Image (cartoon, rainbow, N blue to C red; front, top):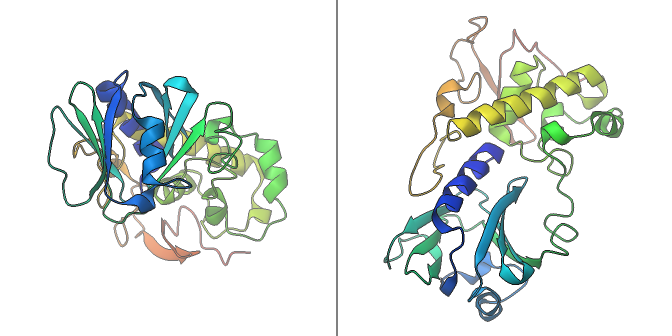
Length: 277
């Protein structure tokens, strides 16, 4: 699943290709991707609109269009965008095709079909689902507020930092990486995390994700930004996906466990062993 750095890389590529273009037509082959409205309504609202800006709220891509219309896209597990300079036959898993007045096309491709599209207005898009409960990104989080919220919880710290309503943008890859950088075991209960440790987690998450964004994100499994372009940060991961390989810091073999159903990588020496207490 694309995390915050990968989403930002996708947005940068999209802005270079489709900013200021006007939508001439939309072909929709899988209506299930559209939330709260049907194909006719989706096309009626978007056709004729111009794309004025593309930003993000956490892992959500926000397309700002004329008439104060907002289209919100979430890539989920396998969502990808592909840009073409001319009319192009959609690939097998291309389910939505945006056609522009200059004959360029943007295809949304999603083999799992978990991606989502919502339409909102500029006045309400931050006040309604799916964005109304998305927290700030790590470098904008109120540390004291978050600490007060989790300090009595027995939930594992890794599970907690994956909750987008507490911290936006951190996914499985960067949760492992920032906990390693902070030397905190992923199963440590939140009630045993100090405010200084929480500051460290947020700082490292921000630093690591910024570095990943510069390198085009982490291309693990099937991630590509735009038109099959892959990232390079996977080459600099310290623990994630490195099970049974020596830790770069202490040479102890990296372990893999499950934390709330998520594959989790850590160094038993640098991060210590934990029983979750």
